[in-house]
Image 1: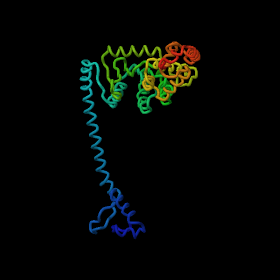
Image 2: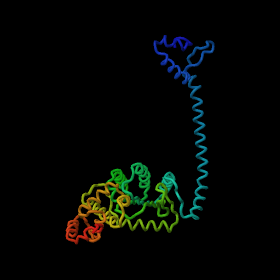
Image 3: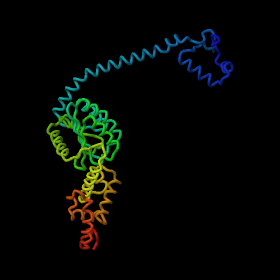
Image 4: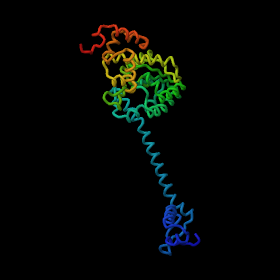
Amino acid sequence: MSSSAVLPAALPGQLSTSVEEVEEALGQLSAMGLLCPADDKPGMLTAVSPDSAAAQTLFPMEQALRDQQSAVAQMRAELERMRPLYATNRAKWLQSSGIEILQTLKSVRSMLTELAASCTTEMLTAQPGGGRPTPVLEEAIVRDEDMLRRGVKIRTLYQHTARYNQPTVAYVGRVAQLGAEVRTLSDGFARLIVFDRKTAVISYHGHPHGGVLVHDQSIVDFAVASFERTWLTATPFSADYQVEQVRALSSEVKQDIMRLLVSGLDDRAIARRLGMGLRSCQRHIAEIMDQLGARSRLHAGYLIGQSNLLESPDPDTDAPAVRAAAAGAPEGAKDPVRTP
């Protein structure tokens, strides 16, 4: 400024600029402490040196920051003092109670993070439902890679349909590079995570976003034994696309669809059991019915049962024989739901 004090109303004319721009600039300078009212000239503003402005505006902010840092350090110390008390009482509670209900998704995730951080030897996971959502995989990859780098062994079970989900394939590729083992099978296992063969987290019936934390060693041993039996029948999940393996797995999925058709499940229930989308499931069912020459779902179930297709390693190769058998069967046997 050319003078020691200025009149704000005169600045637009002196600077050849708009009133709004002058008001905005004055507001910014005042907020920074670089302008203040002139003591001996009412209504006028005078400039303040940057050093004085820093002392007046930054010091209170720096002091508030120091106070916050001190409060954080004090809170951290208090929490550290509570850690042994929590651990002791939790251990006593676990001895008296074999399970703990986790009501919400937040509590499940928090518990998984805690268990993963303390896991030292092995984590077993069984994740039915096909491909996993990307946000879930993004959360899991951080936790799982940390465990693998600490030397924890990880074995994971998915359903075959997870092989056709690109985010899941990418996840498998990353953890496999660090030593994780992943296998898939079509059906027949429940959601399960076991840490160090001492603690398990399983599904909470009727609460899709909750879970059950199991500490009872007999129940955990049973869960581990179930996992091991299923693991032996599963197929290794390679991130590389292998045509012959994909064909074999597709045939296995069709076998399971036919098995569930015969058992009377509807399309939605079959899709849910096999971890696939409803439309994909309906497309498979339509292909099976077309290959069998079936006129209805019940007719398809009848043909499958009569022709022992569930015992065939490749239902596609036996479909022509089934159509021929159906064509040569008595009229009443062709379609069990047909009205005479």
